[in-house]
Image 1 (cartoon, rainbow, N blue to C red):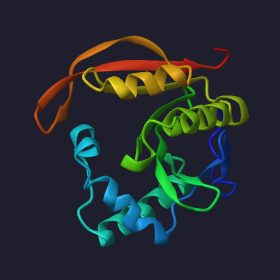
Image 2 (cartoon, one colour; image 1 turned 120 degrees about the vertical axis):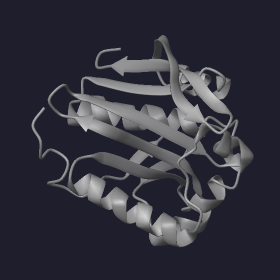
Image 3 (cartoon, rainbow, N blue to C red; image 1 turned 90 degrees about the vertical axis):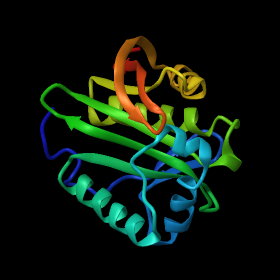
Length: 184
């Protein structure tokens, strides 16, 4: 893949089934973003977390720089009305090998409605079909059964277990590695 295929255009707004939109984060989203990290379930799986709205704004600025430098793509998952339901990201963009890593979370009120799997399917189709990535990976704690279902529903196959691969608040966790490749 050639570098420059992302930064030459504005970050897109991606539609997902069920009236969802993946759109770049906006300043007004900071409170909703921060609230995700107040949630015990989100905190269980995400140890890198902001503590203030000012810090969230710094992260949003970093997300814009990631797009401009082709290092990552970060979206708010929202309803058509603009209400933020979650986060979707592609990180670790490797244009030489055509690989990126997906990450996500969903706010408590939106859980159980297929928000994460629909958003993941949408960003995956965009990355694989429109941009030309060959492989998308994601990993999650082997204890996070919900994330495993999200990955599977979005077409990511379980490839194996990475032993002691990530630190969580309660110690090191084994991580499941899932991937989706172009043509799956």
